[in-house]
Length: 269
Ligand SMILES: NC(=O)c1ccc[n+]([C@@H]2O[C@H](COP(=O)([O-])OP(=O)(O)OC[C@H]3O[C@@H](n4cnc5c(N)ncnc54)[C@H](OP(=O)(O)O)[C@@H]3O)[C@@H](O)[C@H]2O)c1
Image: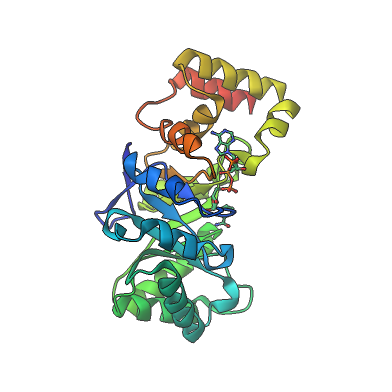
């Protein structure tokens, strides 16, 4: 497993982690991520899977990097602190490694939210702050507010949709993050389970992926995951409820599509 920097923290995280939206709680699935040296688990208060994650990591908490999220309706400072406490309790841990604002709030000022974030960091309940589904402008505002209110803590990651099928961040967000040393945590690298349908509708892309898979001796899913971690600042968090697919998805690290394969996939996409 290759690791990538988490912002400017000095901490490195696996470039392939594990998403838990729709995770049904089979502990062996999460434990396999540790055996494969990719113990980076992403959850959220809204997924209702934090308790499953807590059960799976019990007794080995120190070995994992745990990321969770606070929903926009809880972005008032006091609500954020309460949400953080509840997440800690459900996860059965003392500190969240990465606490992410799940999406921008349409009504609560970011300064008010970051007041809460600064508090949970100061109290030692959160190590690092992140955002999710934030634009470049929203990220800049979030980072400035947190810096001011926390005495220098930064927004170290932005979790956003990123796959061969959804390349919107390449226009501005990905270059901004690469330049400013912010980690991009890409979600839904496998089209949220609609892989078969997506590929059927796009024969040229499907052919390019199959060719790359054949040439590298990998699967199409592995080619897609490898594509998603091409940038030195990008990691990805595919989800599965099947142990054997953790093996498959994690074996998408430790090698690279050639420039020609990458270009052919992009041209077809
Ligand atoms: N921040 C946000 O707003 C946001 C939004 C969406 C997702 N996320 C995060 O990102 C994670 C991943 O995204 P996602 O769950 O939307 O979708 P995804 O990872 O693109 O796709 C997951 C689906 O792909 C299937 N799958 C997994 N490995 C496979 C393989 N090797 N070959 C074929 N199919 C495979 C899974 O089915 P099986 O279980 O049957 O293997 C599941 O149905 C989420 O769990 C969540 O943590 C965040």
